Length: 103
Image (cartoon, rainbow, N blue to C red; front, side):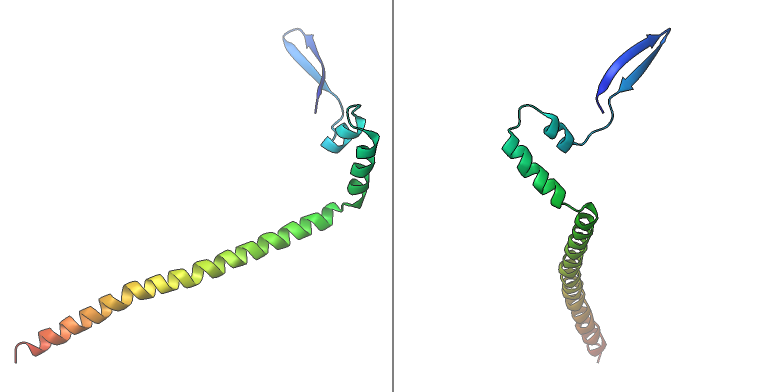
């Protein structure tokens, strides 16, 4: 929102604003944009559906999250398996050797 005016009443300052506008509305009101470009922008703006755009974005975010989870899961499972397996095997071998040594 753009500030329209400030009015000082005693020690208080009251601010008045212009009505809120989108960047598209500012472009359409601008004198610096050629008419052909405004027509192109209007065509694109009319073809947009905010609800459909939101659904598409949400679907793509879900897909990204699923891919992230798939990449994360096997790697962490393999790392934990690789870490645990040698320790368990070496511990098992050491225990068997200690049982065999006294005899």
